[in-house]
Image (cartoon, rainbow, N blue to C red; front, top):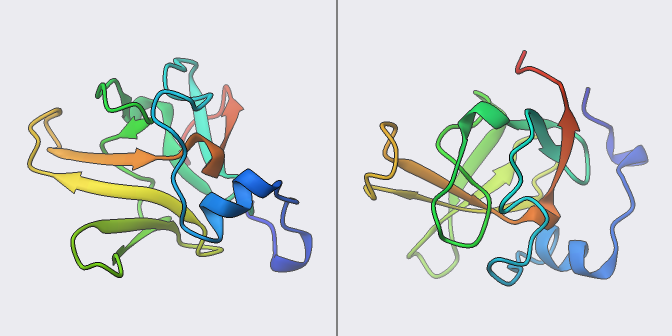
Length: 128
């Protein structure tokens, strides 16, 4: 269950830069880029469930990639520059990364490009 604003997880400077200031970690630097365990990915700040490991795939882009989110838990918003679509936690509004379509990398034809610093992994958990 997602936490309330009063008990969100504390963030370090790098995590705040990504989640609150909409930064991006360096490609191929995140803990979850090549991570292959089965479980659930949740928002690092509020622990809201975001992605099942079943939706994770190797895109070669340097960030964890998912071709679908847990329905209703990730929202999308046009970036300030109007060129990309940002993805955010639907519970705490934390920045996750960007979504890209039309690349033909999976049958869903969608790639959620997520910063490892925006998420936590919960092992052996199945999507609800």
